[in-house]
Length: 78
Image: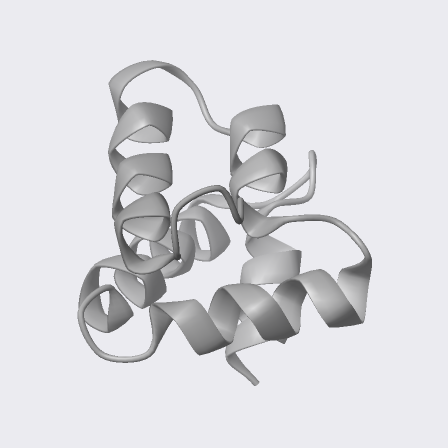
C-alpha cells in the first residue's frame, strides 16, 4: 500500500494531495521501517526510491526527502 502511494506521488502528473502523501509517508516512517519500504519499492518498481525522488522533487523538498530515506539505509545501498 505505501509503495503504491509512493509510486503515485512520484509520477510527473501527481496532484498536490499525492505529493503531500509522499512527504507524509517518508516523514512518519523514516525512523520506523523506511529501510523495508525503500527495499520493497526498489524490488517492485526496479528503481531506487531515492533516485525516483531526485527525478521528481525539487529544491530543498527533494534534499529533505532524500536525506530522510538515505539515513534509514545501510551505507552505499541507495
